[in-house]
Structures are given as C-alpha cells and as structure tokens.
Image (cartoon, rainbow, N blue to C red; front, side, top):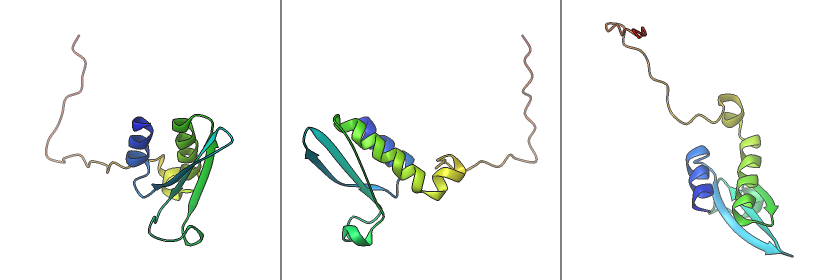
Length: 95
C-alpha cells in the first residue's frame, strides 16, 4: 500500500486519495484533484479490486488515462536539463 501511495504521489502529484470503501469483499479507491470540494464538483476517478493496493493502482491507471499531461508526456514530472554550450563531454568507449 505504501508503494502504491508513493507511486501516486510521484506519478500524479495533483491527484489525491479521496476515500476507500469496501463492498462485498471488493475495495474501491476514489482519487480526486480537490479533496476539499464535494465529489460532484471534483474530477473523481473510482476503481475497485479485491486487493486494496491493486484497487489503488487501477484507480491510478484510470487517473493517468484522463490526465492530459500524463498521456502526452508519458507521466514525466522531472524537468528537462539543457546541455551547456561551452563544455564538451567525451562519451567514447575506450575499452
């Protein structure tokens, strides 16, 4: 569960866990962008699975599918690094 929550925090930092419910041996996880707003005002994704961490991961996949930045950039959250123009680096393999 800790790994699934860490993946959610790193992969989609704007999405937060809203609630976890259990119905007939199935766990449902709801993710939203604005937890302080009511559900009908928020972008909410809910998905379920009998195993709680897998329910969170399936909700993560659904949130990634509806997030435009995740679909276009492949979920990148790290900014790109520009090369220095005045420094040359040798990348040859001398072995």
